[in-house]
Image (cartoon, rainbow, N blue to C red; front, side, top):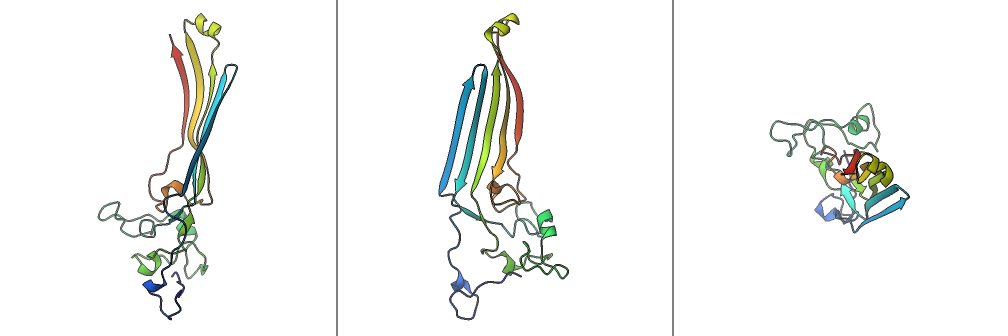
Length: 192
């Protein structure tokens, strides 16, 4: 089980040992930047977004394996995340630094307290969108009776740079939630 520090030195682990930890859960810095450029018939644009100075906590109740999940309704249980299956304390794996404490079929209150054990850095930088386009020259477009034609490739949520690697950092502490989707598009815009 997770061990806690006796902060006030009274020989007991109580609520008096609770102290502020981490950064706020709402990012103190949210930023974005983008650029659009064109050269001859080509155009390119991208947008970056990110946040800094925030913390989140892996939710030990919503991610605990084999435990009834309050988000899924009665009679349903959380699945065993691959990362917990590969890194949990057991008699066969006595790793004191395993990500998950001992597995259990019921919630262990000691292991579900807010602590630095489950605290993670919420900072990230995401390549939110990228688009590359090609405008058909007017002379070529007019040959097929078009006033304008543009081909493009685009993508959203392409890459995420973060210290946190277990799941998408924007999902916060609930790795069983629905992640942000990566989307690719190929398109053609035409005007007659």
